[in-house]
Length: 234
Picture (cartoon, rainbow, N blue to C red):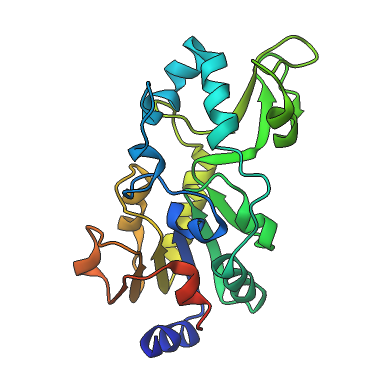
């Protein structure tokens, strides 16, 4: 902790790259741990249900799963989210790059957030482009339809879909300009997001994750603890 505190104090361009483990302390399950979503038993694997082909071919089944498991609208930011807001307000944090779709960084007050996989809080009609809230999706029945009759789709990146180009470029630009990159709450097994770390040219790489990651050997500092617990001590 003393080393991490010193690195944070010395750094002026911090970028935080986070995954599902950042939100577990807010009560949102992760995906790949032993208790994660992907290790729960379903008749159709979650990876399949969260694919673009399943969305279009089994839309009602997709939305049944999506409403049940992917819309934690009552979740609140935890210590990790709040610490990042402090750093941003102090002028030390360049950006948050997140693989999460839960919107907790913005709910905490972060302003510069690159959401690589989209957000549950943005939904749009595939026919006319009209926007709908997450609450509308949560409260709808069956397949949510627009007032024009079109199909509404969450603005989340499903398996088989491409990441948003502008979001990708913004995230890469931030990572390449960072002097301290903190990678937290991610197994670094989701691509292409994990490959963005290759653009880091700064001095200090810190990994905070409950379990080991493929990059542990390359980091200056590895802390195998919960992200919120670590950042709350700074």
